[in-house]
Amino acid sequence: MALLKEILLVDDDSINLLLCELLSQKEGFAEKCVKCFNGQEAINYLKRIVEEDHPAPDLIFLDINMPVMNGWDFLNEFEQIKPTLRRRPKIIVLSSSPDPNDVTKAYSYSEVIHFISKPLQAQSLRDIRAKHFQHLS
Image (cartoon, rainbow, N blue to C red; front, side, top):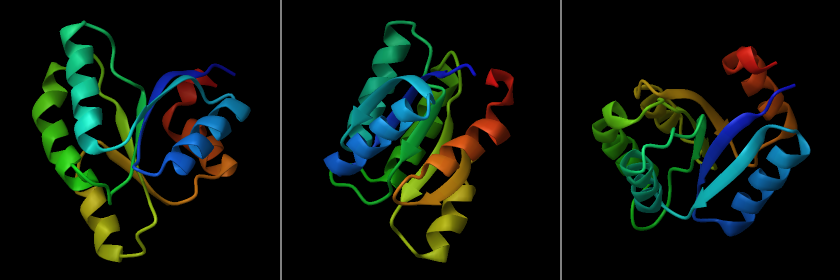
């Protein structure tokens, strides 16, 4: 089973970032995990990718509640830079928010393909691969 080339993990919780990275490795989900601690770091990373003419990550796991730039602000900024990306990453909101309004709001962004409650589970990665990355199976 082929791996995604790269995933971008955006979360201010270093334990959650580590958990996602280790789970991705254990499940053979992605070759590379890039970690950012807030939305601004992630936007800066994506802009650097554009400048260096590298492909964007296949997938972004995005938390909502973060300092500096939260997930909603990231999504708004992302809308501005996505036309400059060589590849459009899919986005999964990975949040501890139980608010149904957050789920509805997340799906209002065209690149958001899923809303998952923390913590990330192995079965979620298998489901994501089967549903959204069948070409890699």
